[in-house]
Length: 80
Image 1 (cartoon, one colour):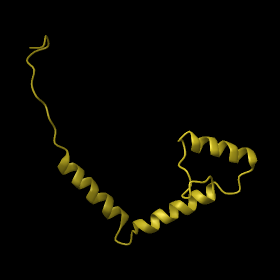
Image 2 (image 1 turned 30 degrees about the vertical axis):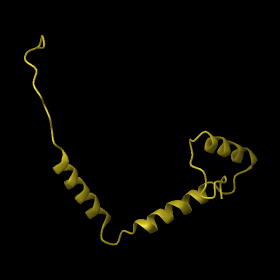
Image 3 (image 1 turned 90 degrees about the horizontal axis):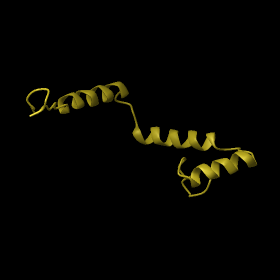
């Protein structure tokens, strides 16, 4: 027994709320959402973001990839 009173079990089941949240997310994305196209767009944006780096920027990028801060490029190389 606790000095603050009797102990009791307390549990909250959020599974119904999680299903409702997922339903709202999918509704917000809409019927035309294409996850493959979204992923391709993200990969294209990442390639563009890290393209055209000067020597110092490339060195820092390579260090961040080696440290695991940034993911390596698809081919295992640095920026595309």
